[in-house]
Amino acid sequence: MRSIETPEGEARAVVSPADRERLTLVLGHGAGGGIEAPDLVALAHALPTQGVTVIRVEQPWRVAGRRVATRPAALDVAWSAVLAELALAGPVVAGGRSAGARVACRTAVSVGAMGCLALAFPLHPPGRPETSRIGELTAAGVPTLVVQGDRDSFGGLPEFPELAAGIVVRRVPFADHSMRVAKSAPVTQREALSLVVDAVSRWCRTLVPTRAGRVFDAPTADPTR
Image (cartoon, rainbow, N blue to C red; front, side, top):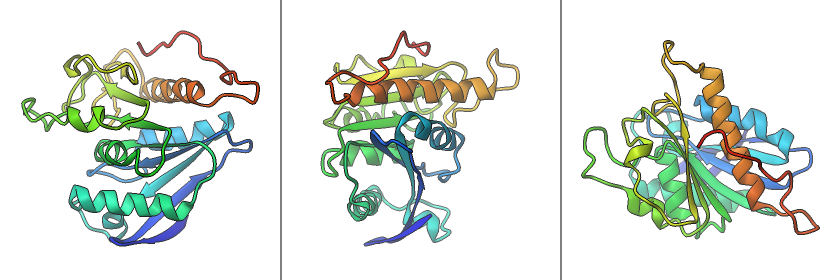
């Protein structure tokens, strides 16, 4: 764990390094939880074996022990400061879950990311579909992957409009906003998280070419469609 000073206070970065790094994925957390979220942990455990270094960033408000997230502009400032301090070399994907996904979308271009990962993108507040945040997603300005649970109260897969070719949406059957599935669901929690990892892994492979100019470990059919 690395402590990083930002204009908004101390942030923390937890690095899960890849042995043969091809890509770095930086992930932020949501407003209701931290970097211990199951999907973030699953990615940090699985992707380093596939050449992807995963860095989970804990925002200053969370490090300080506050229960309520700071305003979006402050989140963006802290996030950008962390990425600048990390001074990452090579291809970088900015991402996060829920509020962290919004931060990643808003700042992807300014931090120099080649792609954006949005886990459980909060399309709208629960029960308020008229308050759409789709503009943040479409304005990311880089290739973007959205991984969304069927039962997400912040916007399930059917609620997403038809998006530009650079934005790919993948579903996690029976999962809610936290990527959790009910015990009565026909898929297990482990299977749901495996679908998240698989969708992210396959998408990452499309972003980084080998020295020969070909995509490494080219993906086959995507089971999350």
